[in-house]
Length: 154
Image (cartoon, rainbow, N blue to C red; front, side):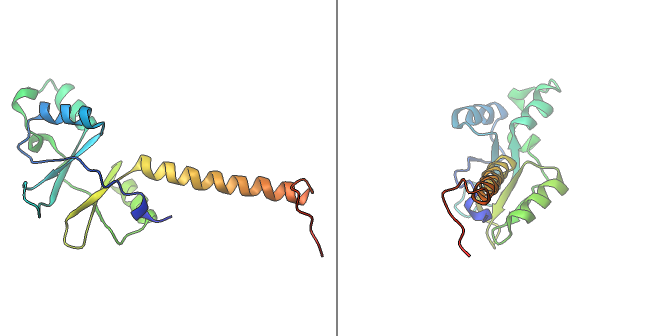
């Protein structure tokens, strides 16, 4: 299973000066749980952080912070966790586990944004692969019992 096939290239991005309320509406409107914060609005902008729906709850709502006065840059995850596009699926899972994050920003060799991969993306792909393996076991057992329509010849 190739990590590149799991990358979501439809990433919603914002500059750090975006008001938090605008970011929350953008998440709702775009049906995403995270926004990637870019260092500028230029074509060669680099990711500097991630703002998640959880960040909005934990850092703004639960704290009673004045959302109208806050920007994405005030609360976005400053310690950006990225993974190079040449890394694999198991490196992604290991990094998520080590860093305690559910999403990784995937970057190219120069640090440019390629997309996001989430724990959910990985879990879906792994469960589909495991389901295929389970089906293989079931078919193998049926074949051994002569129930699969394939007769063994010696």
